[in-house]
Length: 421
Image 1 (cartoon, rainbow, N blue to C red):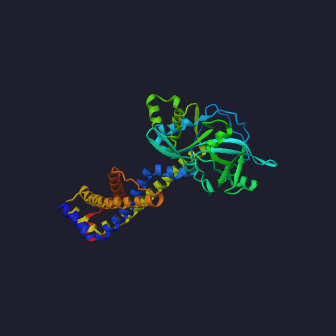
Image 2: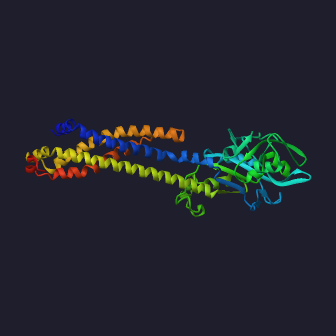
Image 3: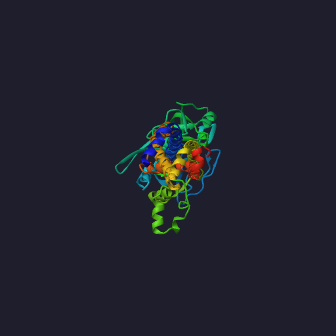
């Protein structure tokens, strides 16, 4: 009899049940999409934010502060220590090597450019453009084209094994040089492959392959600093703790988490006599952006579920009011409050499960479209999300139905059968 009453309620009130089901489906679909994207968004957002440049800087352990005015490095070429270029491939040997998207060594050299009657002090910076390196069995390409994607070149990029250079557009204007011209440095001519525009100090500098700077400085294998671009996890309480104060188990957890601090620590282990630190503004902005995006997704999810609960409440209230004589008859025949409530909650549960399944697959499709249109990659739907979504659907349906069911339980059978309830 209970199953028949349940079946008849759906058969006779198709319109009401459909309205409530659509509301639940839409809310669950939005919740599924937002939760799926939020749980899979970390790496994708980090990869998008990596287009804003490196987030780690490696320098010699006993390095002194670089002094630059107007893009010109005023420190004597022999001042300070240097890192070894030969140690740089070891960056790909760290625990989080797959999180390292690229690195760029820098070696600034003070030079004088121009003719004998009119010379201009400037800085030449040696670096990798798209250098092919090998570490063990791994082969990879790295350089400023990975770590400094905002650099714009009018012309062509120099090859790392050539003597071609880039000249900043401001310096080129002062010296009246153009792409294809020859720049004389230390008695040797260098072909200008292109004009560089960055909006920073590089616009007044010369950017050359690293061996060119090492040759001018007279220090083969020397590197002044290294910019590293790595996928990291936003800071939390553990990330902000001093690893020296951690116990063994806590230290292992910190070391095996992709915090910017732990990756910096591993870079120091990989490169002898080095000091690695985060470029704080970049790293903090990443965490802030990611937290705000996840917060926005949470608000959208809660708003969609709240709207679904309101729609279910309105539909159920109307449906139960239309069935007040049925409730009165059940009570007149001896049904207790528990039996009446059980019938309506069973209806709500069945409606929630049917709508939840539909909403889950609809939300999965929506998450797929979001991943493709925004991140150009696929959002992964974890299997554990399905029971969570079904539980959310049941809770939302119960929340929307509770007030109406409570009213139905309180119907007086006498007044309900007369139609006065």
